[in-house]
Amino acid sequence: MIYQIAYGQEKIKFNLSDELNVDIFQSQQRLPIENPKQTIIRSFSNPLLSKPLNEILSKRKDGYICVVISDSTRPIPNLIILDALMVTFNELNIPDEKVKILIANGMHRKCTPKEIKEMVGKDVLFKYDIINHDANDDQMLEYLGETELKTPIYINRTYLQASIKIITGLVEPHFFAGFSGGRKSIVPGIAGKDTILGNHCATNINSPYARFGIIKDNPVFSDADEILKMKQVRPDFMINVCINPEHQITKIISGSYRIYNELVKYQKKICFRPISELYDVVITGNGGYPLDRNLYQAVKSMAIGEMAVKKGGTIISVNECRDGIGSSSFEKQINLNIPPDEIQKKILEGKLSEPDQWQTQILARILSKANIYVISSISHEKLGNIGLKYASDIETAISECIKKYGSKMRVLILPDGPEILPIYHRKNFKYI
Image (cartoon, rainbow, N blue to C red):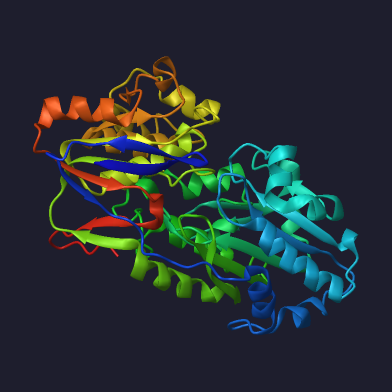
């Protein structure tokens, strides 16, 4: 039978024998909002737990407005949100030089001019000051103290000094923060390196609650949420959305940062599907471009596979990885020539502590449970020596799996990235 899965900006087809026991979980059909720009504009007048946006903006005085947007690795429709905001700014005669767009890169590389144009559109690009956040630039940051978990708090100074702070984001399940959106625009989005390293520390990542769909008792979430709620940090207005697998907006919510849980509740109802047995093989990806643009991001799809694969099973990770491995630190870490169990141990003991170690920690955890085949544009030689296996296509990987598990093996296909996730019900542990 022919199946397909998102890969870059296309879908690739693959053929599996009818003898295999194959299940496929596809996300619920979610129709896009017909006129998202107008819907967003209307939401500004009827926000939740907040005064209307134009009323907030009218109290700007002489300062500037800072709008935080996600970087190029996220499929959020920044252009539509910014177009809606631009209409409002123009109606209020707010001078262009009084608006700053801050890209929440976290510790990712800075967005390129080409990527910025793709993200925000030509009108916004030439109208407003657009700033690439750099977590390593101390001149960009201001120190605000520590969290209860002793995470040092460094936040972008342009944001902190704004008269009006607006954050935007996409809410969907996240592999260690529970859900994206909300406070993630701040931490890691516009936080300093030390803040991100503290929030993403080995102890926090090692928590059994630092998983997809979990907020309660998740130290990664609670630590960042504490920072978001600080008087100096909390935004004046928030715009968060949900999307379907085609990256079209399906739900919009505007208002106070306190409304975040409304979208979390919405996603919990539609993104999770219970399973009673684990699978021999799980075929999954990140849902295509832009989230599958490098191997670093592809670890998220491997974490999706981890949720449904047996101990000793195989995850087939399908991501284009047009940008290759990702950061140099991650590339170094997957070439340490150390077994996954030993890597986990070193990270937890503090012997390996550097940017992106959280991704390596999660990858090592998954490799300790299952084999991983990588279907991508990356060559075999570039996959490092951490234990990732190369296959030229899905059928080749499946043939190797049949040799190991037999022709009656159970296979699960998850073609939509984090839009639909399997939940294995275990005793004494409620996942979400």
